[in-house]
Image 1 (spheres, each protein chain N blue to C red):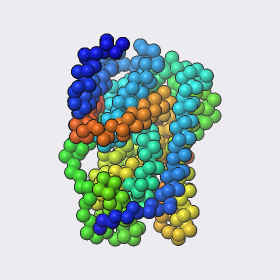
Image 2: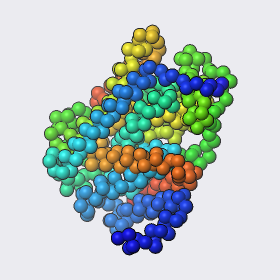
Image 3: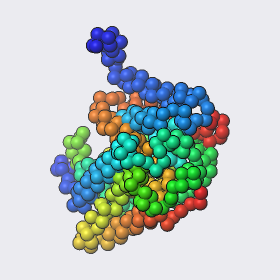
Image 4: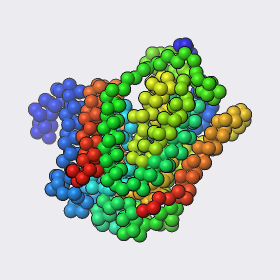
Amino acid sequence: MNLHERPAVAEEQLRYARVLEWGARLGLAAAVLAFALYIAGILPGRVPLEELPTFWSLPLADYLQRSATPVGWKWIGLAMHGDFASIIGIALLSSVSVACLAAVLPIYARRADRVYAILCVLAIGVLALAASGVLVVGH
Amino acid sequence: MRESTGPTARRMTDLPLSRRVRTAAAVLLAIVVCVPDAFAGGAPDTGAGLAWWIWPLALFAVCFALGIVAVPAGVGGGVLFVPIVGGFFPFHLDFVRGAGLLVALASALAAGPNLLRVGLADLRLALPLAVLASASSIVGALVGLALPSAVVQTALGITILAIVALMASARKSEFPHVAAPDRLSAALAIHGVFHDVARGESVRWQVRRTPLGLVLFTGIGVLAGMFGLGAGWANVPVLNLVMGAPLKVSAGTSSFILSLVDSSAAWVYLNQGAVLAIVAVPSVAGMMLGARIGARLLTVLKASVVRRLVLALLTAAGLRALLKGLGVWV
């Protein structure tokens, strides 16, 4: 069972790794940069920083109501505010796997590996469903 | 300046490294246990009596320390983050769970590229499990956000204490013997070869009981989404002990699966407004920086000592979550 040669890593793994590396760096950099601008006061938050302690201990429903924070994708319209600008980087981090899966899909298709091509599409579909905002809970 | 720190500093550095780590962890435990009492007189606090910046700064410091101990202890950041920050900081559990998912996600994304390149994370093994676990993590996230806080807090406490029991008792098998792959894994061609640097050789592997693994990962996804925990504590035993993947492949593939599972759940929290930048960003940054230090200390720290300390931290945090959920220690 043991081999002394170093095994080759599959082409799709290397491509997935490349996209993941750059996507994660981009998302993290965006989140940290926007957060730095936010706490430095250059990009003021929608909720003033000094008022945050009265909001962060509230249950989600109360927080949404008292801060008039929208749910779903409406946050994107508030991205000029520091607190929501930071969310862009977080959204990038949460989306990078979609780009990775889309990048390896052509490799499976070219190899006629139908099951894994379908699994990639399903994984993208699940992430897209989660990101769509159509799944909601009552607050 | 060197003279002023002289004797004490020399005595500290003369201590064995494992003892210094034990002391540091005891201090960390004391800090997290005392945070509410020290700053707010033990009342159920909002942190409103303090300057706003103290809490994200304290969050960054605690996450940095958690990141250092998480790597040598072999746990993801999320499982430490949620009970400790949820139990001892003034942030509501809804926001802590959203940040916990992002902490686990960021760690998984950071580790993923290297794990894939060296073959310790395997895409063929991960994808079928990750599709089911990410779908179920959406359900878990929706249920977790819909349930009353006290119920989630109590369930979190019970889950964390169960994780402690699992971590303390679970066996590990570095190279499980899989005589023959099951039919599903054979049909999906789930097998591979990985190079074990420590042994200086490559090892072939295959898996068994794939249908059972799929069912278990569906349940793990629900827990990950509901409590905002990274689920490495469950992924690794299922991959290693149930499915028979080598330990290192299990750990690497588990981390990779988390990157997909936590992405789905994180989107649910994000769209529901349960991600606060002031909680999430310092946590992610602190944990990732701490994990880098922890990875460097991996070769010098005694893993068993760090692991015992992490179990002690988790026990304290699990009890705190349970008592908070039951209204005994609010």
